[in-house]
Length: 403
Ligand SMILES: [Zn+2]
Image (tube, rainbow, N blue to C red; front, side, top):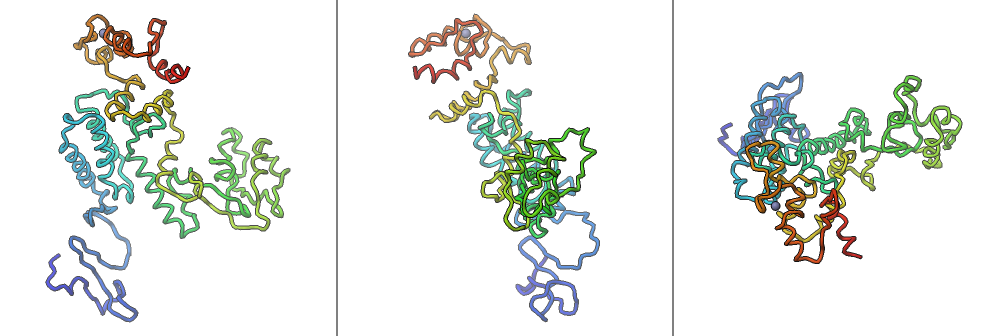
């Protein structure tokens, strides 16, 4: 939009009754024009969005996603960012740092405001994965999902675009819902439903079976599917409270004794108060994107060697050595015998002794080269045991050294 005079940053529209009122009884402003942006004030009827409104200070409009060309634009932007970095000249640790610091941050403002289409999240993950492992790796040693797990579950702590997007949207959803006394939560994303806990006041707002008020999950989850048709799903917690005391006998008609004990241990206020909805994962009851993100991971199984991985991450070692050790402990180092399964024209032999298959155990413990190195140390791996497992041995190593 061409602007001739500074005054025309605001278009006044004194006669119309449409627009933003500049002051009581003053002119109505029908539009505001910024550097590359234009706000138009109008009366809303039914609006059909057909084109993109572009972006304001880099923030993509919700309409942005309605046009697939725009999703492609973001994907292209992510791709070109990666193309600018020469993956081959960087160690894996260096690539990981770049992915964590820059790539997760590319769509930061967008990812916190708008629901990402699945294909954008997927493409973002594919770009990161290829950059990290190298384009030539058809079968990455560790799945990208596992790489995105936090370190305490055996991953590398890369932020998952999909999970972060959900956590950030839960924050928006919560903010919007505050003015509706959390009513909107009933329609909120599953992460929000999962994290909310009721503090019982008078029990009138709390659905007995479907809300999180006794456990971090609804009581309904404890009832086998075939028994659920007998339940009154409209029952409120208030139905089981009389004179601010739990109605033990009434409760026993619908739940088992072990659950009853849990309910009886929930304190009731001396006089009836409103029920309160809080955010469970944070001890202070306040919502944070970080806790919403972690909540989505809490049911993920951790890698069986997580304790050993934790010890390793705490060591004072160069990052590239740690990353190598991470693969080693997960038994995902791509030794020759492993690669041979996928690339038949590769020589599966150990390139050091040229006498055995190069397995992980061979490389670290059995190969004459490795044996000679171990001899220079005060510790001696008992590789002569049958089924010697190098990782198990490493895990026990600190105990052995304590003795
Ligand atoms: Zn060898």
